[in-house]
Amino acid sequence: MKNSIKFKNLHLGLSSLTVIGVGFTYGICPNRILPFFFDFEVNSIDLNNVFRAIMGLYLGLAFYWLIGIFKPEYWRNATLICIIFMGGLAFGRIISIILDGIPSLPFSIGTILEILLMFWGIRNLKKDIYFERNQE
Image 1 (spheres, one colour):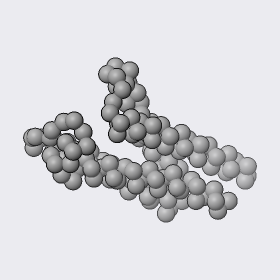
Image 2 (image 1 turned 135 degrees about the vertical axis):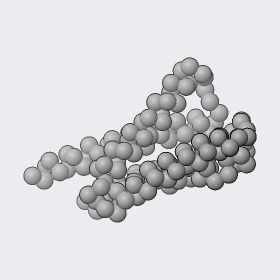
Image 3 (image 1 turned 90 degrees about the horizontal axis):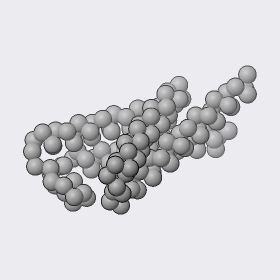
Image 4 (image 1 turned 90 degrees about the vertical axis):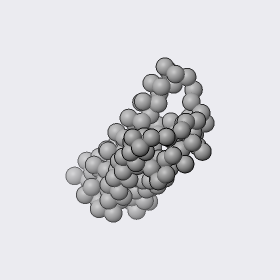
């Protein structure tokens, strides 16, 4: 059972670290960092504001997922929110691939990671529910 707990917490931990990293990339200094990674310029206060708001959203979600690791009573909700978040990002990217074509390598890797993290979360949630039902 201990390995199972570590494995299911690993999902939230890796999701948190990934989203924290991406959040900081988007929001620390968008007008300097984002042109380095992506093919666009951030050249207005409003765009800086949008990317810093995205950073805040990402950091807030990652913080909740970390709470789910350390407070077991929040684990299911944190996992469900992680599944919805990763699935929502993947869904949007898939729509973009269909409508716009294949994106650059960083965005393609992001799509794959989001799909993997979504399915890993679904697997963990199903296992947790199955385990709980069989304990009764």
